Each structure stands twice: as C-alpha cells, then as structure tokens.
Image (cartoon, rainbow, N blue to C red; front, side, top):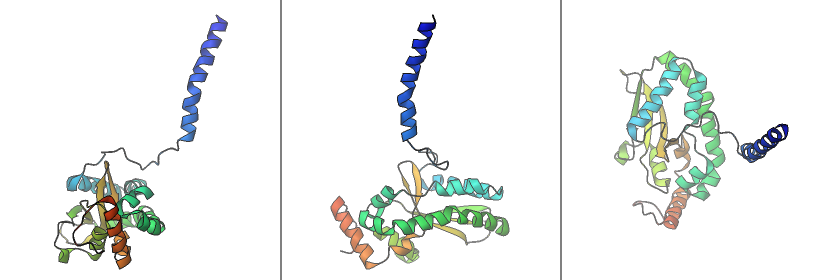
Length: 213
C-alpha cells in the first residue's frame, strides 16, 4: 500500500514538473492587461472605457485610472504594424516616454483635474471622417503615417455644460483591445515620416490616396 502511494505521488510530481517549468518560463501578464473584448469596438466601446476612467477619478482610485490608461499602451510590434518598422524603431523610445507619462503622472493629474473641474462627461469623436480642416494637425499626421487605415478617435473628458476639457488623442481598436498612440502624431509630421509610411504601404500592397512618395 505504501509503495503504491509512493508511486502515485511520484507520478503526480512528474506530471506537474513540465507545467511548473512552463509557468516559470512565461512571465506574468501585467495587472492592467485586459482580456480581449473587455471593451467593444466603435465609439460606444471607447466611451464606456473612458466612463470607467472617469468613475475611477471621481472615487480617487488612482491605481484603477493608471491600469485603465496603461491597458491602451501599444507594444513594440503593434507600433511597427501601425506605422512601419523603420519609423517604429526610431520613435519607440519617445512613445514609451509619452505612454509612461500618460499612465503614471498623467493618471494622478487627471484625478486632480476631474475633482477640481467637476468633470462629468465623456465625448468620443471619430476624426478620420472629419474634413481635413477640422482635424488637429497631430491627427492628420497620424493618419498620413499609418500603414493600415483604421478608424481613429479622440476623447474628451469634460463638463456637460462646457465644450472643452482634457483631450486624449490617437485611439484605434485592434485584436480586441483599444490602443493609443497618445501624442505620437506630433512626431509623425515630417516629410521623412510621410515618405517612410508610403514605403511601408508599398511593401504591404496598401494604397492610401494622398500619401507622399
């Protein structure tokens, strides 16, 4: 009987060893990484995400605000797929700095601003369908630099009775997640950047009218 139990115990240990090795090899996902589909595509999904951000601000839950904002930060491969590998390599350090600022000190500042200004509203705008004259220059440059054409949105957190507020830029939906380029559009407006985007589109066989060669 004791020999049988020992064999069973040994068998369980051997079976669990590969799983333990795999768990050690695979790094834990960040706490702010959301399951795909947590927020739906389209303006309603993005509005719901930022309504949750606003609700967390009102509760002074800075950790929750940080996690929601951080959940929209792109990985390096995602950035390369969006603006092409050459531009992504050049701009990756800057994007990391921008995104880190948004999710860290930006979360703290947003909580304070919501409290001070009594913000109570979220407005989502799809900018890629606006006339060029109504677009922010950063939005125009972001659209010109994108290898693949995706719906692009901006978000404002504000008071219902006021037109302006805190603006967040450069949102798109990809593989079940909302992602943001944040303020990266400001650094995509050079002629070199537009030429790089056009070259990347040619490699992928994507034709975007108006792109400079």
